[in-house]
Length: 280
Ligand SMILES: Nc1ncnc2c1ncn2[C@@H]1O[C@H](COP(=O)(O)OP(=O)(O)OP(=O)(O)O)[C@@H](O)[C@H]1O
Image 1: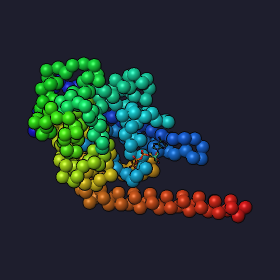
Image 2: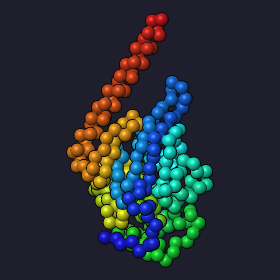
Image 3: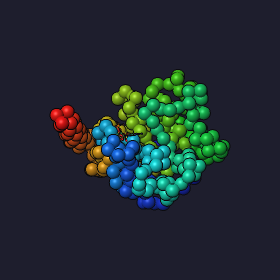
Image 4: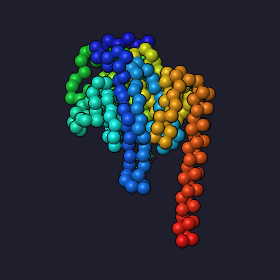
């Protein structure tokens, strides 16, 4: 078990570490516009692993991007900790992201020319400050716990996919951010490495109090979460607390069937219109 030695100022107890309120995101204008998020409100409680699930194209990545301040909503508001990010300029937004948010991506996104330690220390460098002694001690605990201690001088190309993702997790946790956002973190891993990575993320939430939001298609991955929220057609439609894999799979099956039925219905409408236009 890791014990944190780095002083950390967490979000106020029981206050959400991130929140969106009545967020809508529309791409394009007129009849071709796509509503990726439709009046979504969600608060992320501290110290938990929260999974966001939904059929393809349901708005999961858009939600994550709005929560991280990587994308601005068409309407509605978003907060990281106590700071409203929807009103911030680019510079302040970048600073908040660097200090308060860690990212884990499907494709690892490590710097190929840097070794493991260089990659893990990157958030400090990007934020233009040297890690303090306490932060260094913390990083060393992390790399130990993540099983990377004997790989510190290796470059990403010399590591397995699972090891690369563990480096990405160490990097995301290094600054003890308020929130870690993980986008399909096991999407490029075999099931054994994927299960290891998920156990590490769940452990980071359980034993370090790290707040993590993970977007995933995979019911087995989401079953590591203490809360699973489901999104369909840009709306939050359901949520489960500490669900089993079977319970998650059942909800997903239902949502995917509904999404397929809606798509078929829309396609039939389009064909009907086209047919009528041809006859006219
Ligand atoms: N930049 C964009 N321009 C236009 N439409 C977009 C853009 N980004 C996303 N969309 C549309 O918004 C909707 C939601 O997309 P999003 O990527 O958030 O879904 P998702 O649930 O993450 O999908 P997947 O699971 O397939 O990655 C989709 O219909 C998508 O085509």
